Length: 351
Image (tube, rainbow, N blue to C red; front, side, top):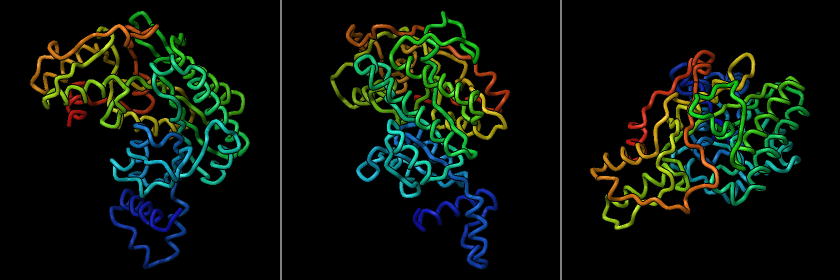
């Protein structure tokens, strides 16, 4: 960890706790050692994605020393970290989460208090084309982390990013923490398997390991392969004069859409509890994709029906019609509640 990164971390820590910069500790050099002990360390596996980048931003504000992994830390662009203007404050290391030795070495090097596993092939649609790669990226990745933490034999808290896709079709009923998994895609199967692995290691080895079962959450950092960002970017191009049409599959699907920067706070809160517990993170309100499209085009002053075409080739072999959540336990346990409405999320993504 470079001196410049340490200095910035101390600045954030002191500002968050005492409201003044760390330059004051120059008067007493021993304070440097004190704050080195106070500085918590977090390892984010999958830091370059939407959630990883927002989580890194949050943890830096809370005074953490933040480490992030990539298969090639030297060659990675880390565009999202650059967009948030925090790349220079994060310690980046190369790690292959599917290689146990690489994971173990990474954990020994970073000595984290908290590990956030956010890596893996994140597209449901792509998982039908790459089922083996998708399943391996999640299950082998989290298995290696859990095994490494078990071998380290010290207090390391592990957060695993689960997914609402694991529930499958709940027949319109709101899923809660007791709802059984019925995955309907390779992605969903991988997420369900990874969640069961976390549960098993928590019970068998008393690890502090938990899964946040996150429903859809969006932001400007979403890649365009996700339907929400595809809608936003295509609508902006059409508003700018493009003659293209927005091609979509089913418009009648309903999803619980939240705001990603709020969801990473829930991740952090889950690791601040006395006991590890899996929790659903969602808004509790589901809206149709047609509504998302209509809100987007309306905010740009256009009629969406004139700009959208439905295509059969974009319809998946199996798709969930309604995804609905009951996040009441997260509110009761964490005091966390989603705040942004879908209209506000669209506004933020358009800007």
